[in-house]
Length: 464
Ligand code: URP
Ligand code: ZN
Ligand code: ZN
Image 1 (cartoon, helix red, strand yellow):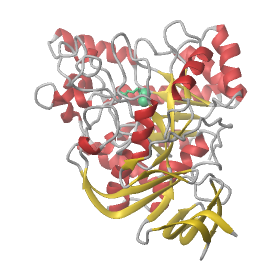
Image 2 (image 1 turned 60 degrees about the vertical axis):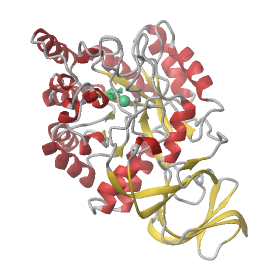
Image 3 (image 1 turned 135 degrees about the vertical axis):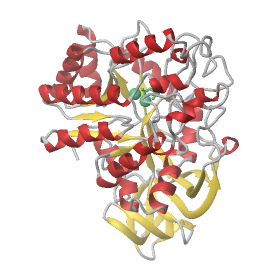
Image 4 (image 1 turned 120 degrees about the horizontal axis):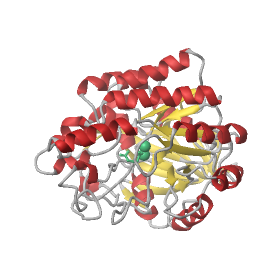
């Protein structure tokens, strides 16, 4: 049998384990894993490693961010950046604008993405209102049509839900078999600390981190887990930043609860001191939860190694720095409260984990594949079509050169932001080719020009 494309000479991190074989691709799907396969197009690259195309299940693209504030990425730049970082699918969040219903928001968001993507995309919902129409009609209908995960916030004045509202959302998830994701930080405690800091004149970017200390996250995580226990639903805790919060998750699992957890590159590479950089440069690192201390890094690594963290995402939430619509928003220099929260990272997530994790022998290639692709697909209803190199799956593959050493430079990245928090980081191991459904969308750092990305309808979460 002749395939459309055969990838030869590769170490393959397949669903069945780390092996050496050819990959035969026909009609955009993996048709054969075997030796000496025949194909019309041959991709040869001995010395490379074929990994499942990355799935980044926590990104923010074109998300409404308040009056006068604009996210630095639309679907064109966001998915271009993702593809250049070895990703083949991303899952951004759909947040209704003021006065918009959830269904209207989804329609508008779909229109922004359609025809503009270089990776495949699907959307989580953000539930910020629990009125009868949202809860009784929109949410159930949207789950039925493939929006099977949604995020609730315990912080941010305009998004935070009360415990009762979170329980009501969890009840809908339980009834309709969807996944709840939670941003766990205690809003009242943060407001208390922010007021205190401002009264003391502590207004620089660093105080964003100081007013969101670890107990704020640990307490909210404990409470979110308790609410999930009461509602009887699984729960995903996103962007976990520290050891005490990790301990809460381990304790919950020991009690038999189904809790999933995510962490991100910023919590193993950045610290709160980055928010204290000279001038206003600290604003480049303002995100929530904030980066912590170097003492927290080994605790997060331990969670990555031992399986506390099911998924490793970027929480890509890009703003421009030298821009009044971004980090230099009006009032931002007068108080950290006015600095838009979030950092870019969709293109650097995988190289950072590969270099710091695989090359430094903290994690195996199989674990890398699990926490960067397979588990994302399972948790969010895309498995087995996405997330693994297996016969019958979409041919979404990233080819990695494990020996290529390069320094992260803003000038080499493809996002819409004008900086990267990882400027100057030296990494070994980079994706050199990204293949989406059999088509090359990035080669040697250059993105393809035709946006072949599709919208993905998702099934129910597969509770790993
Ligand atoms: O600071 C962050 N992480 N902004 C993005 C929104 C969120 O909470 O994930
Ligand atoms: Zn969040
Ligand atoms: Zn986020």
